[in-house]
Image 1 (spheres, rainbow, N blue to C red):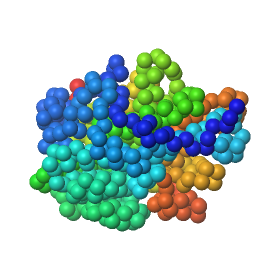
Image 2: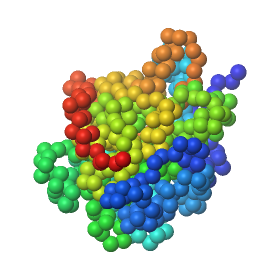
Image 3: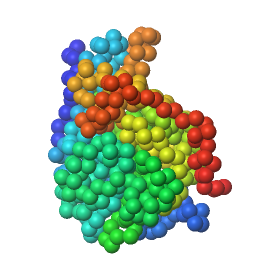
Length: 455
């Protein structure tokens, strides 16, 4: 039997021309967003002042199974997609495992990640609406970079509020965003009322995605011809990221393969939901029964230790209320190297699936994550981002379990970003100064106690 290729690039005519909307196949759909003032379900038009109108329509659409990708977005996708499906032969050999390990590599563009899949779509729709400016946040910098790229292409101004600890750790991320014309501000900042309020309460804070979201929203609603865009958590972002899963399944079908377990790192849920999307519908409809594993950092364990409840998406309480697994919007994650995974909540679709027992979740410490990243890099040549390395850690654990049991499982994980701007983190791991942080119940209690009271 002929060996499968190390990397399988689909031909351009296999590039998806429609996004897959998982909600259309869910019998138990996510709870509606609520107006925080009335606690009643939001109508789409209530969100139009904040988000791009077409994105709002996608956010509220639970019925349309496939949504056509606009031609200009497909044309942009063709510059870096389809992305390769890779077989980790060298890693398999190093682990001496009977398992087959595949990964979908999303790092082959300047942003270094999957984030560009949604950034292009969101910026296109903003341009079609006639908007001139966009405002957003970024954690590790991948989303900010992707938005800077998309805005440069479509001719839209961009302001990025970057979590302060990442702003310090990753100066070259800032430089790349600025190269594409974006303005980058360390968050929390003195430029917004939300930022000033956070600094007044926590003057030494390293920031959080919740803080940066508050500032980006305030900047958007206070600026003419501007809207807020975001790179994870929301349903329309998962919709755009479904191209990852569609391509992965097409490629695996060409190899006559089907995964037994599908693994993704978990922050807000965008790459996780994108990779798992079309496989999740197989499980929901009974066509197959793969396992789904979400991997999050010990320092910010929204699924494994959070509460399934309505919460704000930001620290300043400017967003609608969303029902999700959350640590509380006031939770300030430890400033470790989990980067873009340091968010207090999880996408409502994935939260509902986890609540229903469709997804598994595990939390891992950063030292074991970087140990896995170094092993992967040594054998597969790609230096993974800290976020993606959480999935690498879990994939290696599954492969080692197969070595113990003799099972010949097929493992698929998402390599959603590259680590070339994360050398401060790798240096900390290599010189032995990296530590693990696991919050105590007492650490988590205040933010959980402050969750909105919704019956």
